[in-house]
Image (tube, rainbow, N blue to C red; front, side, top):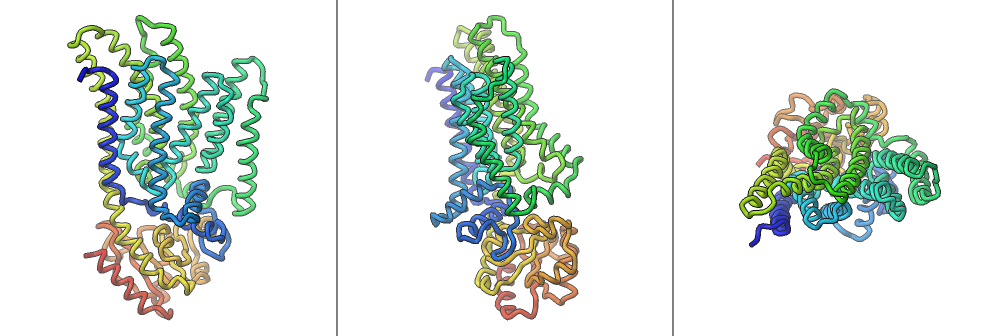
Length: 531
């Protein structure tokens, strides 16, 4: 087969798809526990109880993915399994991101070689990253949000660089979806709106807002209505989970996490900068136009990149599994890196143009550069392995525990636990979120008071520990519940093992009618998890 750009791109994409599929199969069983929080809200909404955590209690906004909750609620109405449905949506989002990579490459380059090269490199970086497989199947909105983020950047760039007013409708609609999916989407969208207005003003030397009417109709008005609904329904400006994680945030730990993230993205930034500032000896008008459009794309991307991450500076979120909150930024970088490397490879090709031997040398140089950029991805293989194990552990611990409690859900029992996802979703019990992410009292006050615990009087308290023997709770906020269990003579049951460093210790109230049967059910879960 002739060694040409098209064949190389086809081979590269084929290999990356195979590797992505293997990683996807390996981690398919993984669904993060937090996803079941969204599932619980969605199920309650679909069943007509509203956006509530515990049926019959006041609404609380313990999720940060409103549109995702609505989508999952729709799957409940269709009688679909949310675990499988969210994985399918994740796969569709991967496909959508890949299509956007092609649109970006096609719009910047006129030359087919450059188009194929830019698209292929962006796609290869994207698919070979183990985090892509993880976030595709996690059950949360991460991959869907990454798709919307790239879509908003793309449509804003089309307006700015190509002065294409037809894309204002697309930008307004995609910005609305992005803002409804995650709170920081509002900040990103507003930032890009100001960027569009600024560029319009610079180009036209006057501020004509008529072309921006679609943004008012399709974005600003719906967002204002949504915010009014949120505040009037939940009586809080921010989701309770955002409030809690901001209060407990540590700016020094977050900066450390950002520095760690920079270790992965600095090579891509260097490549992008080289492509911008390299002096091309035989530059053509077409190449000047490409670089101009690429600069506009980078300006749009940088605004989105900064606003997407600045909200996490004072939170404890950056170190979440698989760099969850930083991952969409990788997608943006991959889009830009594909274009940058295509430009660089064109220059390398011009220096080795001619004989087969020189073309082979060019190919080896280009392949080596791509290989160097892919090396940081190897770091994420440990995430792939650990989350593969966590997926299996969740079934033997949290899901098994929730299913064991589900026969007693009609008795209106309450469980207090740190882990609020699968246990609550499968048990259908009322739940006190010890961390306060789904509990307004604990979220606002930072910790449960003895009076509050006595008033709520949970029938089951689950304490986390890193040891098979409960030396002390894993979280300080668990201590009041632990003390309450000891003072009120709860029965400490055998621990349920999640992994060698993560155990759930159930404390069961003795004077409830189903005490013996619940105790036996939980002891069976403990036995099976430790076998």
